[in-house]
Image (cartoon, rainbow, N blue to C red; front, side, top):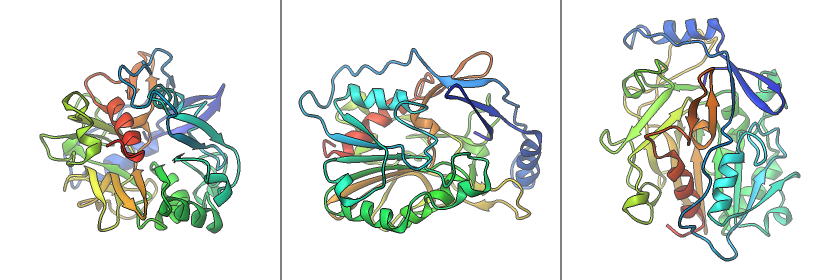
Length: 324
């Protein structure tokens, strides 16, 4: 979501500044129907009532060992803004260990899955240094080699500045990041009036056919997923775009003098094999969160009614560990 970030009590606050609303309107008005984006001034917090119980866990004995990165100025951590996600996959049998150190071959060896969400080049997202590489070259090589040898990676990098901070590691896997904000006025939620909230469905063929979208059975099949403003991605030739952007999608940057560029052919969810391992890359993080937003405490993320984002999270992890 378009936002300024304020850190207080480990909670997430968003304020959409007026200049950014004006930028969006001006940037796309020549290409899309007119729209407005409401200001959001209230606090967004993790939903304490989000259901993390899994009726039929994938793992009942010795589940996969997950190392959850918290050493690279991560905006999302297993005990913070991504706690609902961490609790959900723990309920599915995954065993989670927070990562507090540098990525090395020795540090990664004991684990089956690595989760990285919104790593940054600096602690504060609005600092100029935030877009600098979050990982050293040695760390990028270590992660690449670990995955190639059989590890699995869930790599989430949101809109600017997260894409720039993550692109050196993404490049090790042949993934390109737009490092911008992705919008699609034709595939959004009319009531929200925010073109960054992109809807993916089977009907509009934006949910690609993949084990992640099929699940183990019909009840786990994904039919409707929402992304809550992220960036667009390109993947290697053998990757599957299970969240495919429509031809009407655009990439835009606040403060840029250039016009938005087409995001046609790009994606916000990719999956592919890499050597003996597996990789999932997501271009938006809010879709795997569970928050309450605004004065009315509207569900934002996996807890939003009528969507399959909760099942998406489970299916991603099950595919990464080889169950799907």
